[in-house]
Image 1 (cartoon, rainbow, N blue to C red):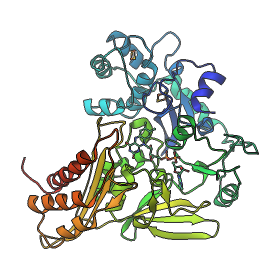
Image 2: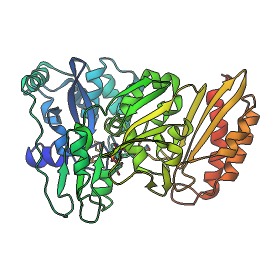
Image 3: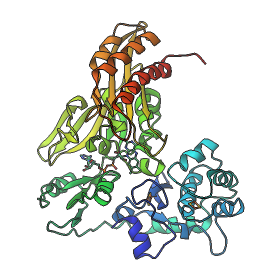
Image 4: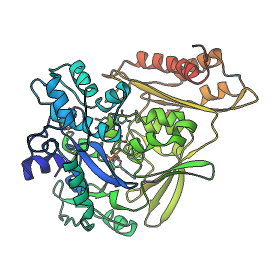
Length: 454
Ligand SMILES: Cc1cc2nc3c(=O)[nH]c(=O)nc-3n(C[C@H](O)[C@H](O)[C@H](O)COP(=O)(O)OP(=O)(O)OC[C@H]3O[C@@H](n4cnc5c(N)ncnc54)[C@H](O)[C@@H]3O)c2cc1C
Ligand code: FES
Ligand code: FES
């Protein structure tokens, strides 16, 4: 059962709407509050993709919870007074996204408002009045009645989650929530009736595949209760990113922002609602040819720590992708950690898509360079959307080595990279267009990393 089915069907809270059912429209947005460093942090979540069990132990706020009796919440008041709703279908989602933003920022900037709303589509009001309303919000985002509800949640004893999974081989029959690695690896042994037991992290790929693309899982092992997986930290010359680290978590890391700009740029996937739950490890394991995280990590020379019941092994990401959606991951193995080496002088990630947000790339690429005495000592270039999986362009990278970083050197590297790939034509672009994008993106990388012309 999804969180959306739970709030609407089981709790009768029908203010939360279902639009697309696949994470694209934001009509189903709810706020999920969790205690972090002494306070409750609310994150916007697409309830249509969120398994209901994920709400366990959290303070869930839906649109019905915002008003205090007859007193509208300051965001609802601003929406009403600024004519920011028409048919009203998108409005609960818009309001909940704004609630999560204002609960963190008393006076958000215009850019922060736009970022918070990039996953919320409105088909009739027009975005200007929604933005005007957001700028006119006056009053606390978390009024006393919500603080009281959050405090009540915290005062309750932490109850362990008990899920009694089904047995058999019917679609969706078993949702397992192991809380330690031993139980996880036991769960992954389940036969699954033709399909292996699936690991579920953020669920943003798996739930779409299961619900929308007709590939239901039989058994799934939810790894979100396994301790130690959501970490992000620096050790031994690399940044270590645990399997449950979300893209929102990566964006919040100052270390990633300053020292791995390619990964920081790639972390801007989907929308706020997607980034709040989608993990880097899930992005890699899903093995899409245009996975933003994988493309950036390939250029940065990342390694994976893979764990199974028989222990851990390290594998360079270069050796992970074997074919379209085929990887070197064993059936009963998980990506436990991603290790990203530091020490790159500069790096950059670029993606070309029809929309800036909530869209996957036609072509993406990343470049990482190490510079010594003004010359490129080491370079790695990766490309997405030009082959069945993200690939390295080794000849183009070789061309850069020993050269001063210049427009000419990157232009030539672009020409080489373009000649190395044989993309296919599909709805996201013809083969010729994709090749052109490869060349042009190399020039854009140079501009981003080195061009100081204002
Ligand atoms: C609206 C929307 C927009 C999106 N936009 C983008 C975008 O702009 N760029 C982009 O790259 N992607 C995008 N995606 C795809 C998706 O969000 C990402 O690929 C995401 O990182 C997947 O992570 P997850 O934790 O949700 O994975 P899940 O859905 O939980 O899992 C995905 C796959 O990985 C496996 N898996 C998960 N975790 C592990 C692990 N630790 N070890 C081994 N296997 C594992 C699962 O079994 C499954 O096969 C979008 C998705 C949606 C719904
Ligand atoms: S219904 Fe569209 S994002 Fe959930
Ligand atoms: S008010 Fe109608 S879709 Fe936004």
